[in-house]
Length: 121
Image (cartoon, rainbow, N blue to C red; front, side):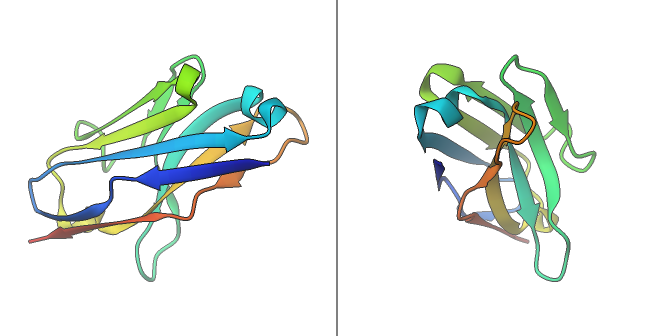
């Protein structure tokens, strides 16, 4: 069992910045076997999509819509991932969910409760 604590969401003007953080805690075995962590977002009426993802080794993936504006980073010792969001646009408005992926074949993935990001025009 893993618990994910997210913070950093809020209301900002277009062009502004926010920094999200997510810290994983709980069962040591499960924490050790986290292979990747990421941020997914879901806007009202739309499907959840991956915004950014980072592996334990530091390999990253970004949605095309956020490339050049968002940067994901991690601190493995703290089991924490960050999402620096710059040049925010109204279309970035969504609930952002932290996610973990297990490297074990039948391992569980975990989700945070979500943090609201609202970008006004």
